[in-house]
Length: 124
Image 1 (cartoon, rainbow, N blue to C red):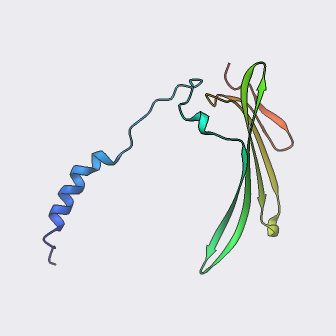
Image 2 (image 1 turned 30 degrees about the vertical axis):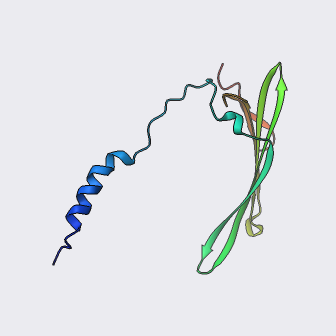
């Protein structure tokens, strides 16, 4: 079996560049202000997830994600509400509502299903 002349060169280049291809590790302290948190805007987004079968696409579910801001006790808070609607063949619905501190995304509460609060004040 004959090895192309450029194969050894390609292996050397890949070995040299491999350590450079990893993203830098960034330490994030819980509760610290996040530099890009101000980029989050209120609004609703819908996502259609599907399965591909040959040339056709079969809908699996629709995800709706809503972001809202409010003020509580003088602190700006952010709510993320998510709704998962499955396809009609096995219809089901799941809702999740989570509250965070707006600037740091520090979690406050998380409720899933029928509004039952699973975790109340995650971090003190």
